[in-house]
Structure formats: structure tokens, C-alpha cells
Amino acid sequence: MSGQLQIDGPGLLARIQALGRIGALAGGGVCRLALSEEDRRGRDQLVAWMRELELEVSIDRIGNIVGTLAGRRDLAPVMMGSHIDTVATGGLYDGALGVLAGLEVVAALRRAGITPERPVQVAAFTNEEGSRFAPDMMGSLVYQGDLPLEAALDTVGIDGTSVRANLERIGYAGPAPVGVGRPHAYLELHVEQGPVLEHEGLEVGAVTGVQGICWTEFTVSGVSNHAGTTPMRLRHDAGAVFVEIARFVRTLTQRYGAGQLGTVGHCRLHPNLVNVIPAEAIFTVDLRNTDKLALDGAEAELLAFAAEAAAQEGVEITHRSLARFDPVAFAPALVDLVERKAQGLGRSVRRLPSGAGHDAQIMARLCPAAMIFVPSVGGLSHNPAEYTKDADLITGAQILLEALFDLSAA
Image 1: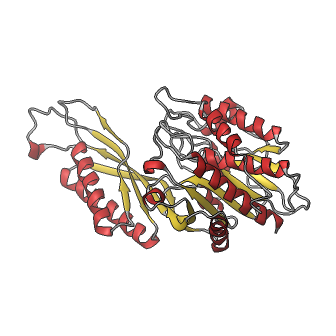
Image 2: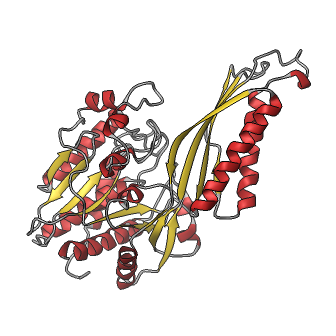
Image 3: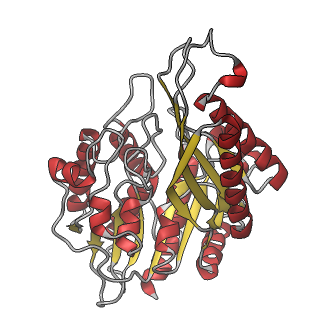
């Protein structure tokens, strides 16, 4: 098989670099926030590439882009995909690799003159990152059916504008209905975004699933007062409660063990002045675990501690859920397939879970799904210095091609 169908490595690398120039940051990296002008330009380039490959391009009402290569038979398609939006200081590979490798898989089939039995699709889902509009994985959630379309369209982002308004502004409020048809299978190639593969000297990860994620936003309301005249015992300090909760998150993860992760990633104090006691603190806590019961327990402990800390300081605290995803296990047969294809190419491979969220975990609710990881140098991602070696990128794409070929022939 590997001798008959080959990925065009230079072609894949050229696409990655070309897309990376759209939204490029002066010091390196990329900023293509979902539904921004840069995202529009990236989408335009992707659609142009799809049409060059003679794919039938469909854009649905949440802006998901799907290019379809017809099969010999009218069967459920095999879908490859990911996203092209980035965080504000992102790298070249997160998300983009999965979409662009999908294009190269189609190009390889075209060069070989192969029409697969099943249709083959390449999908770019809207707003996977969730950096501008919460929740993350929005496009795949709407596609899969767990997030109502109208609720997603009405979502207001960090800049006070809605998903609906921005889709219309950039011209990607598509006419196609969402979630039409159930794929036969879904495959996603992605950089690991972590250090495990590189640390262990491995070339490929056969991803077994995705850990559960719980995002919570807290708002603490205290009393603003003079920092020099208000005794400590008489303060109602929203900032102090924030600090107590942030410290608790770290001790919580230590107590739950290596499988538990916790991050305080965003905080805003008001009035945010050096000599004024904060009247308000708004901050987020990100909890993750591969064990649902442990994740539920950690979340419950966090909420209980937050309430107690607020009561002791004499302030009010509220919270809202920004995102909540249970751990997901990928289809064993597809994980096996990825592992076999890596071994068939003579690559070192191990099974491992994903620490980050991906569209694949949402699609796994709809059809058999799996992921292929290639190493991230230094474990860096969501960082302008994100880097994966060219040879690893091409290896991952070749595994995607060979696994896709088997699935599309089934």
C-alpha cells in the first residue's frame, strides 16, 4: 500500500507555510481568531484549494467547511478534519495540519487515479479553539447535534459581537443545513501539543481518547476601598479570594495525582489599581482528567472551597460553566488501525490519551473516530514557537492516507 499511494511531502509543507502567512505575527506564530478577518482569508484559501482538487464544497449555517470527493457508491463518507482558527498567539500546526493533510490525502488519490468506494470528506470546523467565542469545539458540537444552532449563533464573544454577526460579516453564514448525514468514520491528524512522544523518543501516537474538560468562570464581588487606610480585618477583598482559590487549584491537583490538571488561565481585577482594594475579580479555572468520577469530584471540591473562601472574606461569589466535556474513548478498531499503519511504515508508536480537546472527541459521539499524533518539539503549543519536524508531519499524513484508504474501501 505505502508504495502505491504517497503523500506529496513538499506539497503539504508548502500549504502549511502558505496558510501560516495568513494572520502571521511579527515575531513568529499566527493569530487567526475564529471569524476574524484573518480567519476569513484563511477560509478563502482553503476553499480555493478544495476547488482546485475538484471537491464539492459545502458551507453550513455555523460556517463549517466540508469538501467532498465522490465515491463509487452512495455510502456514508469517511471524514478527515480539524480546524484553521488559532489562539491569539498560536503556531503553524495546531488544527491546520489535520485539514491540510486531508487535502494532501485527496491529492494523492487524485494523482493515483483512484476513486474510493466511499466518499471522502475534508472538514474544517468553526471555532474549535473557543478563544473568541465559548465553548470551544463549537462547529463540531453544532454539527454533531449537542449544541443548538441558534444558541451557537447567538453566542457573544470577548469583543461583544455575536457569532451570527461575524459569520455574516465574513461571508461564511452558509446555506447548508448542519449535521446532514452520519460519517462512516472520522480521522484527525494533529500535533501532540505535549511532550510525551518527544520525551520517549517516539514518532507516532495512536490516540486512545480525550480527557474530560471542565471550564468555570467565577465572579467575586467585594468592596473597593483605600489600600492604606482600611485595616486587613475589615476588608472585603475580591482579589484575596481569587488568590485563595487559585492556590487551592494547585493543591487540588497535587492531591488528586498525575491524572488531574488544573489551570487558572484568565483573571481581571477591578479597578485594577496599585493602591485600591479590588472590588471585583473575574477569573477562570480549567480542570481536566481522563477519569470522569475524579473530574466530577475535583469540580465539586472547587465549588465548595470557592463558596467557603468567599464567605470568610464577606464577599459574594457566582460561577458559570463555560464548557463541560466528559472523557471520550475513541473506537478501538480505529486506534488499532492507526497503530498498525504506523508499524507498517516502520515507525515507533505508542497509545496515549489526548490532554487537549479536539473536534474528534465531539465527532466520536456521532461515528467511530480516532486521532493520529505526531511529536511537538519541546511539547510547545498555543505558542508562536510551536514546531513539529517536517519528517514527522509527512509521516503523520502518510498514516492518515493509508488509514483513510482502508476505511474508504470498506
